[in-house]
Length: 345
Image (cartoon, rainbow, N blue to C red; front, side, top):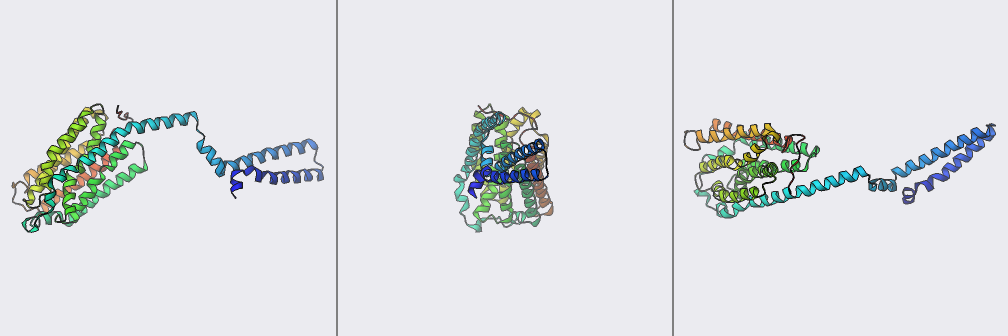
């Protein structure tokens, strides 16, 4: 069997020779003229060679020869792909560093994960608020929107940076489900709450900042430094289960606006090249979230309880709004179509 795949012509030729001999015998029996016979045999011989070549082409040996045969055009494409991958290495490296930096603030508030549950007022308002069936549903809907867009991006792998951008929305979508479906008395759910409102929002924005201002190499490092300075107290507030639960939600709303502000610098610099739909959707959702937080029961401007249906509705609108904004961002990518990809020196 192995010999047949490696040297197909040695197997095919004897059969073809036998076939030619039979054709010649039939020609003589029917008194066919010599010139016609020669032409027929010549045709059969050509067809036999073509047939043998076809078998060799579909054999293992033929596939290997075809796989390693590189034309001039293919060489150009391979070189271009290699150049693009080398160019993207800077973005990959910086995103890995950002992923580590976004976890570091939690090291400064480890004590918040070890406390006496009797000192917490989480179960009074905020616990029932987050555990509401409607908000659990909207968290799942948000995740479905994000993962559907990621699968779409994986199907149409048009650009490696857009693929990376899509996957950076996954941590927020996953942790957002955990913070609604599990009590924050569990350390992992408490961590998920803080991570979703800090690192989960920051990661895709950090990559977009790299792409929109590729020449400003100091800006990403400045952002990471400011992130550490601001997020140490904010993450401590987000994970504080002993203090007032409303303050945790207040930190979450304020941080959503604060942490996304630097990215608008890059967006404004490349406004003509940026997809407009994700920016508009995200801006509207953030504005609504912050406005409802200021005017609602979080700051004491209203006497409503957090588990009041109106508060549940506001939270649900924010969840769905972010889900749609995330999905549209993933589908649109970092830049509009036909805009040159960023080049990092």
